[in-house]
Amino acid sequence: MKREHAVQAILFREANLYAPEPRGVVDVLVVGEKIAAMGKGLPEPNPLPTAVVKLEGRTVIPGLVDLHVHLIGGGGEAGPASRVPPLSFETIVRGGVTTVIGLLGTDGITRSPEDLLAAVRALRERGLSAYLYTGSYWYPPVTLTGSVSRDLVLIPEVLGAKVAIADHRSAQPTPREILRLAAESRLGGMLAGKRGIVHLHVGDGGLDPLFAALEEGHIPISQFHPTHVNRSEEVLSQAVEWARRGGSFDLTAPPADGLPRLEEAFSRIDAAHVPWERVTMSSDGGGSRPRFDADGYLVAYDYFGVETLWEAVRYLHTKAGYPLERLLPLVTENPARILGIPGKGTAEVGYDADLLVLGEDLTIERVFCRGRAFGEA
Image (cartoon, rainbow, N blue to C red; front, top):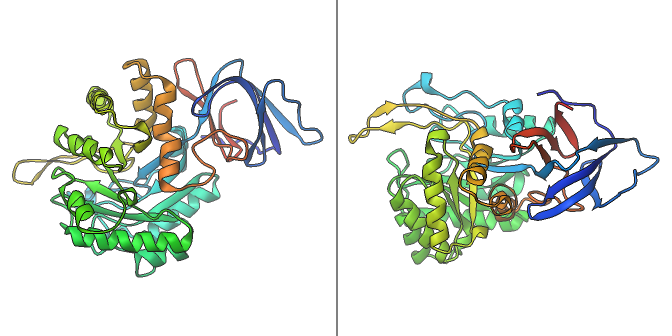
């Protein structure tokens, strides 16, 4: 995707703005990396050089915050040849993602947190906002500095820790081990001024280890954010109960053939009166999608990109009828708030100028990352 020359200011004329709540048709002024003003009939900020973007009522939304992406590729369950390739900067931005959180998957041996950190920093140099979780599927976690708490304190890009539970590929961590990881992540987060969230890959076995950890220790439920909870009806039911107790959870945006099942998941969440503020959705971009038989042997293998995230939002809006203002927080405001990323997920004065310009069919026409423009004019 072509990057355009940066200017000191951009004035969006007549944007149908969702911030993510609807703000109507307004002008949006971007100065440098930040949103400087919003309102009707904004003047150009002379003497700053200003690019005027005439939108004529086209929809503008905050850039997507994708909190679960295998930036350097996942996979490997079928041997070295099954390793998923790294995701490119262009692929991520083309999917409308302006803030991305990278992580390791099954393979924390041939793929390292050092490689992941390098990928995060490369994306940041090109204008994307990128972060990572320390750890992988395994316990004890693989880290950059020797401990989760030190990673959080010493590495600015580290937001929290990842571990896998209830999965035949995981280390089968006990509730006590889950608590120990959460305590270390919480302490490191406090010392670093971060949330220190523990992001949990949830396998087919569900949330039982997490419920047990919650009962056994003194870590608040808000310290955990389980993902992949829409993998089955049983796991989703547990996630609904988790949210009823005050927790949050993450849905995985499926490929096209799984979108009807995602619609069913949303219906169940609504029926259970789960507050949408506690729900996020991510792409699992670059992650493997293996299928195993009853004996645990791999029988099929695939992977998908970050584009599934916006495809899921479009489907839920255009096919299932969910209002855009209900869907957008799941992929913008909610993940930014839950992970504690300042200046993200909302189109507001003083926030980063991460904006998407949409076409009539909600396709992504242009992407702005911290005031830098990508895409065709």
